[in-house]
Amino acid sequence: MFFFDPVYLLFALPALLLGLYAQIKVQSAMSHYSRVAANTTGAEAARALLEANGLYDVQLEESRGFLSDHYDPTKRVLRLSPQVARGRSVAAVGVAAHEAAHALQHATGYWPLQIRTGLVPVVQFGSWLGPIIFLLGWLVSGISPELGTSLALLGVLSFAAVALFAIVTLPVELNASRRAKAMLQRYFVMDQQGMVGVNQVLDAAALTYVAAAVQAISTLLYYVFLLSGFSRRRD
Ligand SMILES: [Zn+2]
Image (cartoon, rainbow, N blue to C red; front, top):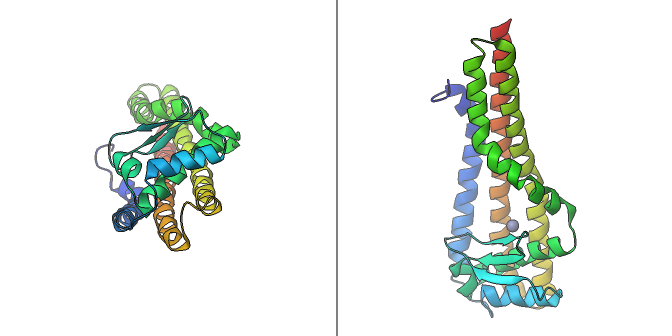
């Protein structure tokens, strides 16, 4: 039931297709606008936007890997991938501005970001512990239906936490992109022509977060569906 379930495919397929589509959009927007020149590198743009907002104490570091760019609210460090940090392109500046916007969200106490940060430890455990607890519940239900169902319910709850995390991520990401676009124009970091590219890159990236949320919700629904099978088995 866990290793190959055709029903799982039914639940997972829409999210899988959307995720694939979003990945293609991001890759093509990134590769295209990485070749369109900008006036600054990603690192320079991020530094300028942070300082324009008085965030002199946010550290800028280089991370490893393609699209590994992120803001770490626990350490107040903005990490940019080499392509973004050193890239003097519309794509690099767009991504860097988006990450700088996360630092700004943090500084202004933007509450969806606070919820998201609070959920990180829950999700780190939930995403790998959830299936194990659920499987354990399924095995135990043959001996003790009550205990089995309780364990499975616990597994489902951890999937619910993962789904909640993915849902809370949406306003955080959309708001960061909105702030990034506004800042790039307000501080004249990017001209109108460049903004067309920034919009394409950030909107494609937003779609990947929508896909991730749909995927997390689909997974939750699948396990709720399996759990309803538990009750039938008990009756
Ligand atoms: Zn982001």
